Image (cartoon, rainbow, N blue to C red; front, side, top):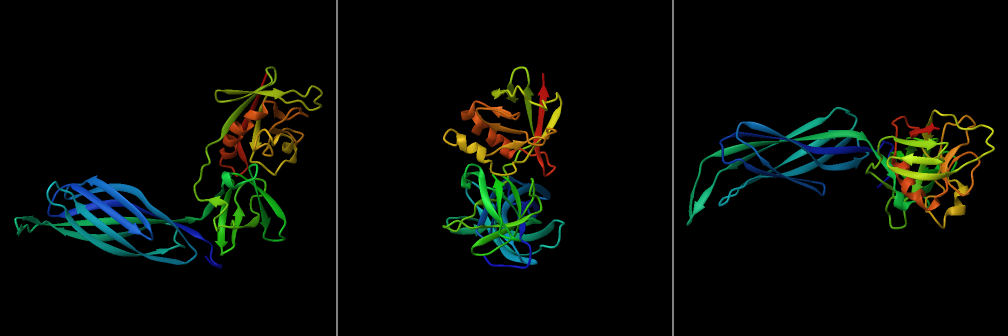
Length: 334
């Protein structure tokens, strides 16, 4: 890894099609693709003079180069009970990382049918296979790895002034560059969207982030004022009521925000639940109402069954409404 002036990009390479022409030597076809340590094996029934769709991922690669070059090794096998016909080839791939459209590459491999028994060899058929690969360029995104957080949070530093900044689990980040010690990124969502920050690699050289996106769709929570409960799908959680609330909840819909910062109020319950400092702000008119665990309430949606907070919080942390701000809605009913 090294510093670069170019933005990091992801190259997603797929095996998209197998075309079969020439002579027919059988229809039980295996294709093996190997590139930069990634390996894909595909078994397909393919008849001569046809094209089959595959659309399987070979691998995802990271680069900061304008032109990303690599060789791909391909093996084609026509499987048979007695005779396997095999051939191989390679294709040199050059991906323009400034090109947003999909880039296709073709490797032509010819297989000559061979038959041999008791030392006698015969067969003069030749099949032609075109293996079509497709490269797709996208921005390199990372996600905060829950298992690497402390109580659901990581603490990064701003690139501008080294000020500390809190990152909740599963937060989406756009990776800009990285070197041997640090990863530099732009926060892609939440209250700090657009802020540039960085994070040091762990002592063993691994990242606090992952490429896999475990985010899910928006959630719908139902807050019953009369029952003093919070419902999510088929689960019901008990709440604490704030009787002298000067700005009581209205029976309407409220947005629920992506977590904003590490809430030290949750430390009172850290011996019971790991994610106690993760709170979810709502769009209540006074602007300071959250969904969180606790034994008393000042008007928030306060779960008194504190030991159940982690099970709900892990779902809420992953939820997103595709607007860079919210995870879903809170519906308040009678």
